[in-house]
Image (cartoon, rainbow, N blue to C red; front, side):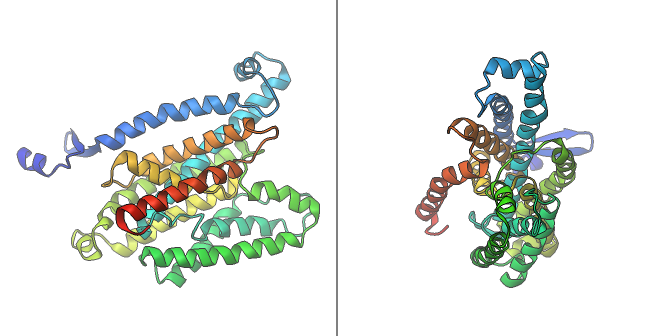
Length: 353
């Protein structure tokens, strides 16, 4: 019996057993995750040290340890560190959401920021400030509601969650363009104070984000990430055709529906908190896939890679220019060449994206 089990074990995995329980551990994915964790830790340190105000590293460390003056301690512990941690959570949510949508559609371009989900979340938050004179961003929890509405429209117009990747992509681009135009129309009717206050968030920004949003976001991710891991495990079988997956006992509609629901919820949460930060949901799964190998749905790797990308972009935006650049601007500048690389590489490999 043991020999038979060994024969069917994938070559990149090892079976871990304890009593009557067993677990298939993918070695390559585990190694990639083990390398990404210290990278994320290093980026947290970099994000705390990075300053757009000229604060020296020594002052920053003293503020982090609580030995500096009260103003420095407040800036580092109450503003900068929570912002970095919220950025990690937002990046993880975007990375996992992109991984799920790419796998569902069978297309690496089918990510939340390209198929209308992010635009739906953005429109919901923007609409909530219509008529306001404060210039404050709307409630972050409206993001998931707008994302759900946009996803429902895309799925209905595309003919279901299991539609071909190109179809989901084309419909999503159309919905994204329309919803984005509605958001622009709303903002064009607002006063300068409101429009200016929302603009930074609308390009993707972590400015002012602290534990007030970090705690509920953490709770939501503690619930959603295990569901994403379970969905990713089942989605591996969808790499076969539908008939093969069904013969293996997969309820295709339920798996696709559950995976899409988790992906939309994660994207909506991320956009509600950090705004529509571009390209992270595209880049994180692609990079994680290269590290994990082609036979895996890299949920954990996508989360860690997305967190690392946001942390790095946010830190870079605070030191690369005389004034602080929103994280969404940095990811957009870096994401354009990455998108071209994905397209050209896919064309060379398969003749299509």
